[in-house]
Amino acid sequence: MSEKRLEAQCLCGQASWRINTPPTPFAHCHCSVCRKAHGSAYATYMAAELDALEWLSGEDQVATFESSDGFKRRFCRACGSVVPGIAADGHVFAPPGGVTDDPGAAAKIHIFVASKAPWFTITDELRQFEVFPKGEGPSSITAGTFEVGSPQPHGSCMCGEVCFELTGPITAARFCHCSRCRRGRAATHAANAFAEQGSVRFLKGEEMIRTFKLPEAQFFAQAFCARCGSVAPRVDPSRGIAVIPFGAFDGDPGVAPAAHIFVGSKCPWHEITDDLPQYDAAPM
Image (cartoon, rainbow, N blue to C red; front, side, top):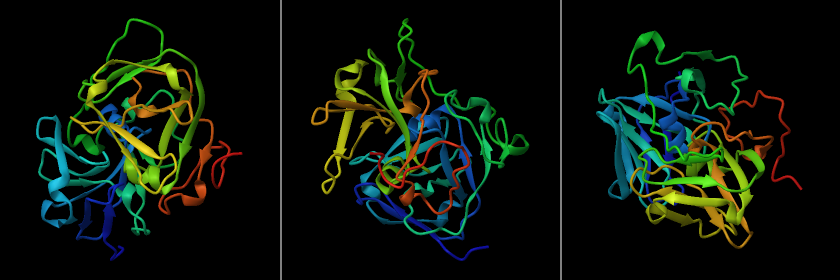
């Protein structure tokens, strides 16, 4: 087993941490709560004992949302990045998405595939479990959904404070592997839908959304619910577009990501196994 340690930080850099034990194999979790928290197709975590977690900076910057009894999800108040949380059994679950170097571990299983997003297809050969392996842990982890009574694609955060619908078509959809998306989502990659600026209509909770703009980036920013940390749709007036995280959709938006972009920045522990087009940076 690798003697490396998993060391990571959030998007804004205020919160950073280390897991002081060699990394265990990662698990991809497809439950709807994880998808909403990270805004992507699934979350990726490793488990560790509580005393293995060492905060290097910014622990006072971390907010907590209890998504189910005893299950404490945590995120940076400033940028919304998911940081290590505490499971109901007292273990730490730590996302490797913010890791810069190769942690010396990789994903070995998919869990909660019974809750998999309808727009995502698993194409690798990792073992799959409908819930937890061997029946350990909860048999169901499901986020609430917001019904709008219309066929328009719609979604919500995991606490239900922020709800939205699309009034126009999705014009592009991509998986993004850039280091900013990985750190911001604390995930293997982002999964983003794009639409015209006026196509996102917030039905409730727009005032709960916080936006962090990365200072050195021309456009990159992350919007999230201030209560639960879920990644939220973001309107970018400078480009006349809206960016919608696929993980926020309730149900099937009728479109799926059609390409991988910025694969030149892909995390070293993830292998792309589907046949979608790949671009080292953004497509021309």
